[in-house]
Amino acid sequence: MPKDPMPAGTVTVGEAVARVLEAHGVTDAFGVISIHNMPVLDAFARRGRIRFIPARGEAGASNMADAATRVTGRTAVCVTSTGTGAGNAAGALVEAQTAGTPMLHLTGQIDRAYLDRGWGFIHEAADQPGLLRAVSKAFFRVSRPEEAVPVLRRALQVAHAAPTGPVSVEIPIDVQKAAVAADRPAGPLPVAPVPPDPAALDRLIEALGRARRPLLWLGGGARGAAAPARRLADAGIGIVTSVAGRGVVDEAHPMSLGAFTIAPSVEDLYREADLMVVVGSHLRSNETRTYVTPLPADLVRVDVDAAADGRGYPGSDFVQGDAVAVLARLAEHVDALSIDPAWAGAVEAAKAAAEAKLAADAGPYAALIDAVGAALPAEAAWVRDVTLSNSIWGNRRPLLDRPGRGVHALGGGIGQGVAMGAGAAIAAGRPALALVGDGGFMLNPVELMTAREAGASLVVLLMNDGGYGVIRNIQDAHYGGRYGYTDLANPGFADLARAFGIGHRRIAALAEAEPALRRAFAAGGVQLVEVDMPAIGDFAIHFAGPPAKGA
Image 1 (tube, one colour):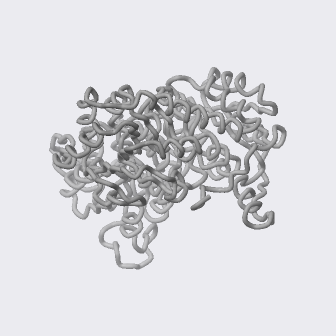
Image 2 (cartoon, rainbow, N blue to C red):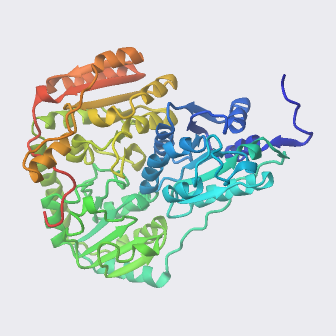
Image 3 (cartoon, one colour):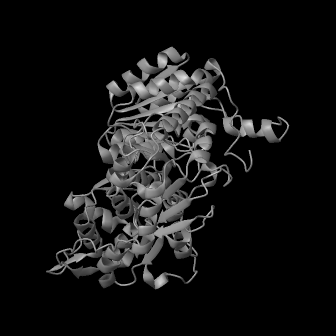
């Protein structure tokens, strides 16, 4: 029989959670239903204001929420069970932490009467808070029903406070079922900006005014600063981006070098530059040849995080502050710049040389790069797993015109691309193209069913070389060509697609690539486009992992 209704004027904590999320603009949640999160999901279903996507696993759900947040700018939620359910999401939370994604992870917990006693209660984890603290920006436990609303609001505030990141909130099941006052939910708590120090900002304005050949390096922390960054590019300042910063300035802009951070021609350009301003970037190892790429001596870091000062590279100055505020102030002074008239030509020449080298390195796959660029719909997200093809070309092509179009597994873990593609397509309501390798694809193909059930428009470009191609290259380069553990027994991907009820196309000659991709997007729904790499041949270079120090 149905349980008695809640006392007048009250709702369950599960419903209070739903109300708070609605008041914060949450429209999408992904997860796996369980006995330890049903009060929250029951409220989602009854109220009908938050779309819940049942993923096939918690790792996929977390990747979906991560990508959904990145492409829409709206906070998405991952809902898991306690114990192993929360643990399954841990690797994907590491990815969200690496990318600085302000998503929310809601997890259940066992009843408070048995919590932290170590009795082996079903679904208990020995130290779930410790686990989630390690993989999240912050962790909160709701210990009493009356704490649920303020804790959740605080968690969302922390997720969006710079530097942003995923936040985990744990709510025991007896708390979720408990009654709380049915108060009108309050909106988001204010997120205090980090205003730049006026003296440091004045120094930077003066340095930019003196520069004749300036460059901006834009990272993920600059994703909200597209408008002032574009003004600075229009004024003749060269732009280079990390992978996370792709599209902050349209990569078709003549002053944009895109993410060609370590192309030889771009490194030559760094030697010519007399000022580089690095905004919101870690200057990560794989984008600086393990911190030996010769960046200009006059190097000013701009970051909300004081720990960025001197991180990886010594700097000539440091400005702590929000990227939007700093770049907006710099953009106010573009009329006072005295940029070398030849600088724009030097930037364009370096970009052209980097593009030519990319095409040469790709060998026969240069035609695939062109095909993807031609077939990708203008509104589509470009999602990439960690795979050989992405390392050689996907992190730099096709051109992106805004940051919300690019999603990549920045943490370096394989097998996240399918779920990220699904999350991007579902939340944005627009097509997504996910570039994956066969090794990574087989870690999580079941989330194709999630995408199909959700009505997503997702094309998966499966680069099938029958194994871990980059590992083989590393074994060639550093282990005397001794191959081990790299060959994979794959299913027939056409049969797999048929079983999943999705489309399949196979490309054995690259002249087929553009028509196949166009037909896949035109067909709609979930489509698998398999590239038969043994039939086409090898890349012209043997990429053997991230560039080593001094390489």
